[in-house]
Length: 305
Ligand SMILES: Cc1cc2nc3c(=O)[nH]c(=O)nc-3n(C[C@H](O)[C@H](O)[C@H](O)COP(=O)(O)O)c2cc1C
Image: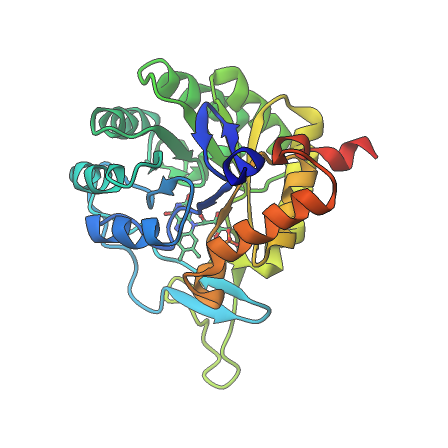
């Protein structure tokens, strides 16, 4: 009963329920996979791996800001391509799909890291297109629809596992989303963090060592709802909604806007490791309360009223 009510298929991945973790709160060491599995997620999503190891920025790299939100400028710290196998092998032991998040400074780098992820047994790759493209003056790849088409096409032509494309908000969001699908994306993950900053009023200094960073958590939830709603209306694609989900209601809103599945990040910091199970419980009751037989009846329902 539980399984059939909440099970979903998104981007070719069969999930027992729609709640996975968002990339990056944890997740490039094997022991992180153990912790992530203990949260009860329906798929384990790694932190973004790049080709070379990256040390990241100096602290402070993550700060709490008001209204259940975080500002982070981690600098994509990760062990590089060599870290993928130990992570995936451990994560696969938990019997849920393992999604490897892939980043890079150039299109060939995305292709290489995605290929390595597949070789290491990933169930899918999620291309984090919020990385600056060093070959194109540091412009975020996802903000340039022509580059989105190219990177997704190049990756999709070498890997057989589903390619999921994660985009941040930009004024080209719909164009980028539609180019991702044209290039072969099986699903879109919307959204990444939104740029922001915070200043200490006594030292007069920005609170992050990198000055600005990515805002996540409750502050960005309405932006995520808008992004999912807008892309769902314009582009035929499976959508994974992410951004500021603290409770099942926030997840339900993203589903009604058009998401088939959701990811939870910042809430793990504010509400602790039980938050995923609490969201899943709430969604199950919600599905019954609104008279649906399965959660699969609800994605995009806000467009039909
Ligand atoms: C500390 C931190 C690190 C993150 N690292 C990554 C990352 O490596 N790759 C990525 O695609 N997104 C990363 N994100 C973004 C999240 O996956 C997610 O898109 C964003 O935080 C919005 O969801 P939330 O409000 O539930 O946290 C990170 C977010 C945080 C807070």
